[in-house]
Image: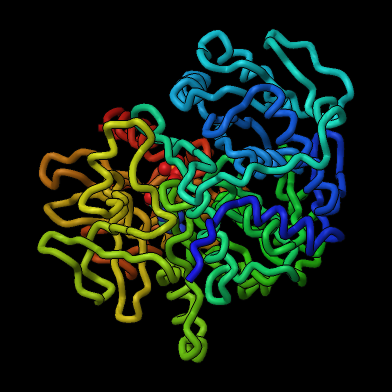
Length: 539
Ligand code: ADP
C-alpha cells in the first residue's frame, strides 16, 4: 500500500473543498457569528501566514488561552498545518501553573481572548520564551494591556495572505498539538499529540459504533477546547464537514438549552456537571430538545440517575465514554450491542452507566494483583492502554517512568470488565477507599446517592480510621426544593438495601457545594481535607 502521511492539513482542505457552504456558528462576547467553512478555511490560511511572518517555525509551540469559538478553531488548524504545535492552555488553572506550562512548553507566541488578558498579565513577568501576544477580540482596537508586543488578531488576518500554502514536508509523526493534564498534585504534565494520532482519533469519533459523528450532525462541544482538545470533536467536525456550534464564554444551562433548541444541535459533549446543570434547566423550563441524537458524557462517572432522567424523562439518548488527556481522549464508549437492545430498561441503564467497550484501534489490559483480571464484572484492576492515539510519554517529565511501562500507559484508574467487555471505572487509584483491607468504590456510592430524588450532587471520600484504616464519608448537596425536608437517616435508609453493611458511609455531611477541579470534576483532595477537619471537629 502507499505510505501517504496522515497529517491534519487534509482535514481543513477537505472542509474547504467539499463543504464550503457548511457552517460554523460561534458565540463570542460580541454575540453569535456565522461563518462558512470556506470563510473559516481562508481565515485559517491567513492566520498561518501571520504566524509565519511573526517568525513561528516548524516544531515551535504556539499557545492558546481561549474559549470555544471560531478564532480558536482557526488556531486549531492554522498552527499544526503550518508545522507548528498547537498548545491549548487550561485557563482555569492557577497563574503559577499557567506560567509553569507556558515556560515548560516554551511557547513562542500566545493567542489570548481579551477577557482572559488580566489572567495572562499576572503570568507575564514569569514568562521566559514568549515573543508575541495576539489578542482575539470582536473589538476593533487592542484593549489596554501591560503585555508587549501585542497584535490584534483581526488586523493581522486582514493583512495576511488568504492563499497561504501549507508546507508539504510535515511528517505524520511530527508533533501537532499539546495539552497539560490538570494534575491534582505537583505540576501539570504535558502530552504531545502527533498528526497521525489526531487523524486516527478523529476517524474513530466517526465510527458508527462510537460517537458516529458525520456530515449530517450539528455538533456542540461544550467541553472546553483547552480540555483534551474538546475531546477531538472540532478536528473530526471540520474533516467530516459537520456543522459546528461553539458556545463561547460564560454560558449558563439556560443558554446551552437555548442554543441546542435554536441551532437544532444533534450531538453535544461535556462533563457530568454540565449535564446536571442542563437537566435542572430542562426539568424547570420548556425546551424542544428533539433534535438531539446523543449527549456524549465523560471526564468523570455519569451518575445512573442522571442518565435515566435524560433518557426516560427527556427522551435524550446518552453516550457515556471514558478517556484521558493522555489518550486523545476516546478509549471506551457505551454503545449497546444489537442483542443488548432487547434487554429491559433497567438492564440497559445498568450497561449505559458503565463506560463501555473498547473503540477499534486500541488495546487494553486490566492488571489485578495476580496478572490480568477475569471478565466477570467483579475483579478490579488497573486499566492499561496502548494504541496509535495513546501518548508514549509525558513531555520532558520524569513522571513518564511511573505511567508508561512495558509499552503500556498505566492509567491509575481502577476498573472491572464484564463478560461482554464493558469496562466500568471503579475509582482513581488514589480515590479508592481501603477499609479493613477491602476496597470500597467511591463512584458506586456517589452514583447511588445521586439516584435519590433529593440529591443534586454527592461525593464520597475516605477519612483515616484507627481500626479500619479508612472509612467513607459522603458529602451531599441537596436540591433546593428538598433542603428543609431531607434527613441523613432518609439517605442512609436509601443506601442500606443497595450495599454491604461495611460499604455504608460512616457519616453524611450536607454541603452547599462540592469543590471542583479546573475541568469540573469533584476535587477530592480538597474535599478530603475539608471532611477530615469536620470529622476531627465533631470527635
Ligand atoms: P484531569 O487529569 O485533569 O482530570 P483528564 O480529563 O485527562 O484530566 O482526566 C482523565 C481521568 O478522568 C481518567 O483517568 C479518569 O479517572 C477520569 N474519567 C474520565 N472519563 C471518565 C468516566 N466516564 N467515568 C469515570 N471517570 C472518568
